[in-house]
Amino acid sequence: MPVIALGLDFGTESVRAILVDSEGREVGSSVSPFEHGQIVDSLPGSEEPLPERYALQCPADWIQSAAVATKEALAKAGLTGEEIVGIGVDFTSCTMLPAKHDGTPLCELESLKSRPLAWPKLWKHHGALEQADRMTSIARERGESFLRRYGGVIGLEWFFPKMLETIEQAPDIAECADVWLEAGDWFVWRLVGGDSDSLVRSTCQAGYKAMWSADEGYPSQDYFQAVHPKLAEAFAKRMPGQSAEQMRSPGEVAGELTEAMATQFGLPAGVPVSAAIIDAHAGVPGVGAAEPGTLVMVLGTSSCHMLNATKMVDMPGVAGVVEGGILPGLFGYETGQAAVGDAFAWLRKLLNRDSFDDLAEEAMRLPPGAEGVSCLDWMNGCRTPLMDGSVRGAFTGLGMQHGPAHLYLALMEASAFGVRWIVEMLRHGDADLPESNQAEQGSSSNRGVPIDRIIATGGLPHHNRAFVEVYADVLGMPIEIHPSSQGPAVGAAVLGMVAAGPEKTPFSSIAEAATAMAAVPEDQRDLILPRLERTQAYDVLYRRYRQLALAVAQQQI
Image (cartoon, rainbow, N blue to C red):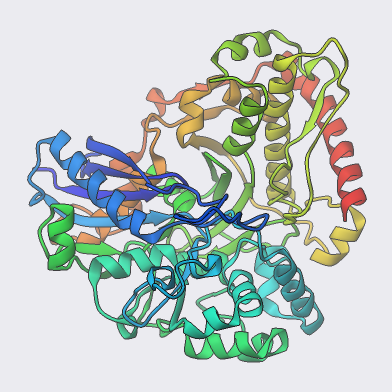
């Protein structure tokens, strides 16, 4: 009889609980929005505006919404909870927070709840731009080896720049912190209990967002000292969970569900809980992509493109390469775009539309190039390949004859051109960056890794098929839309199944579980095929996009 695992998928606005059995059937799911959503205007209970670029969250929302979603999913499936053999967790990253030794977030202390930097910083919090630039500059000056795994740039959304931001801008808050950690690790810690001495950290989150590797560990104490003495002190004394035994890969057991959390979630105590994984990275096992050469595009508020390969290649522009970061035995490459769903939401608000449904048909009747309108979709900065959160987007070529459909098509095309740039970078090992940026990120190895197949998952491909059609035309490659719109959530369930162990499940590896629970037979795949005439037109338009990107990047560098 099939056994069932629970996957908890934490997004920007909500958490999804999904129940998947060992044969891949999604037997129940539910979504519960966070009460406070994204905290970008003011703190709860306050009218004082937050600084520009701030994006925070409420940790109590994570627990409450996850419990509600889990109970609702169990009820929909007609299950008691006793059937669940394992729990997997994926989380937005880098979302991070300061906490006390017992796990209490600093924002829950009466004395600090009115202080923004005591709250968790959402992945899209961009307040640490200056700190990230300085950390990158010092790492280059010192010739730090970890930079080669990140295209030569430390991202402003990453762990240590956000940590340094608090140290420099709110030193009293930093002094109150006993523990700095990723939100995914914090949530798993709450599920399994204990104090910070027993804290488990995810090698996936640490590898991609905190410059950790199995060979070298975190950056050296000397490097942190060169950046800021207080950062070195915090790294040494306020980051428990660094031992080899406490650094655990997704799918490895972080602990067992406590009695208190079992009661809150409607589950039995003692269920194994996997170490956390980044939400986008969970999409790889979540679509059954257990082999190298498959690019998995997780398309949501932002996008992440995950690729496994058999070799490590140094290349400018990549957001991170981690050995075993996604699947054991393979090198996991991460790239991404900072605004996808966010950019469409911005345009929809600008056009005062409830949806794009009425525009999609009109936009797709337009010829490639939106009759002269071009777009650069850097409204939230450029993640790959520039790794620069300060650059901004543009629309060009606008005339009085253009309307909403032209803007919509141009934005879709810009997103697709960005993906083509990423695919070419991965294949050739060269981002072809502006000269000043290329010099900063280091010379290209002029080698790449293969991409043989592309799978799209997340909410956007199912809600916006025209968007995927534009992607296929621009790339000149078929794109497979995975039947589940919840790739990361299914991936979390796969990891929960693996954490349960071969004694309770049919699987002894992530690859086995992912293939059985999420892979789609070749003859059943939903493929979006490129249209030759449009692909040929986009070959010319893509070069125009690259010229626009070069001009805007050079102007803003």
